[in-house]
Length: 157
Image (tube, rainbow, N blue to C red; front, side, top):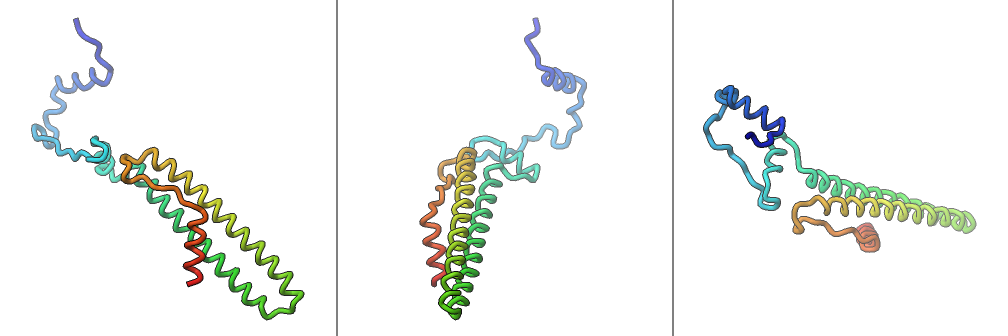
């Protein structure tokens, strides 16, 4: 009595019986397999052989890019606001008041956009931590106030 055989197993068995695997390159030699010490499997080797990166590494790069982009956009926008403040300093008192209110509104809009960007980045970090193979490479979420304080201090220096 024959035990159950999946269609894939049957196809492989038949090909083996017909000698279709006999002339393959490296036939009879051991397969070189690198096992990832973090995950304990060969999936990363297969991805590497296919010239692909593991999903968690791609996610890590995307997060790094998003952080850099958000910081750059914030700094650039705030430098423009500072230039506008300096230009208003030479205007009449009435014009200064009107312009400063507009500038302060723009400054708040820039901060809000940065907070929104950090919120999106933190969602990506959460998703990344779900697929990253080891706790040692998990990332901490970004803190809005710490980010803003650091970027404002860099701009002031």
